[in-house]
Image 1 (cartoon, rainbow, N blue to C red):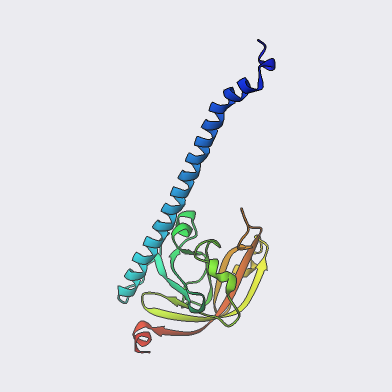
Image 2 (image 1 turned 90 degrees about the vertical axis):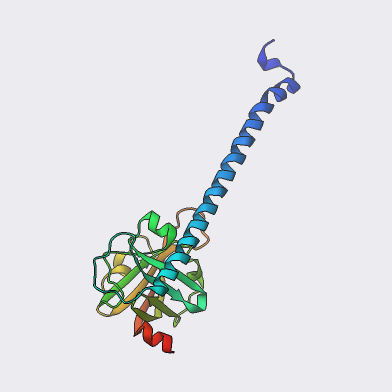
Length: 208
């Protein structure tokens, strides 16, 4: 019999195994995706907890050394938003999966210039969607706490690199993708500019 003229029930029976296989493959892929997402979530949170404890226990550095990719610089805090995250040197995908990245071409805390930090909008920088002018930001290193106040918030095009240009003061810039709830690669960048307003040794912080 010509297969084009097979009864509808026969065709349905022939398709059933294919449908079952497709469902099985889809289910398997979905479980793998969930498993990977769970692993990434757990890995990043364990990394954050371990590095924050190390930073809290660390003593004053004995000498200055050149930072390399992945080195921990400190911890960024935005108290009103409950944002607390480790900052590492470099903005590679591996670094941004576990922490906030410091652009190596920008200044470091305590230096004159613009300290540029980048992070994912759906992980560590998600709380920035609620940031306000005047919010306080702390950047804790092994030795100092640097305090900043938010001076401006803007949304720019991805190729607008002026927001990362060196400054003549002691500034801090956050960069993340925008909109925060956009599905897929976001078309804009969300920028937060802050100005340093104080710096203290951790011994001074502990006395407060």
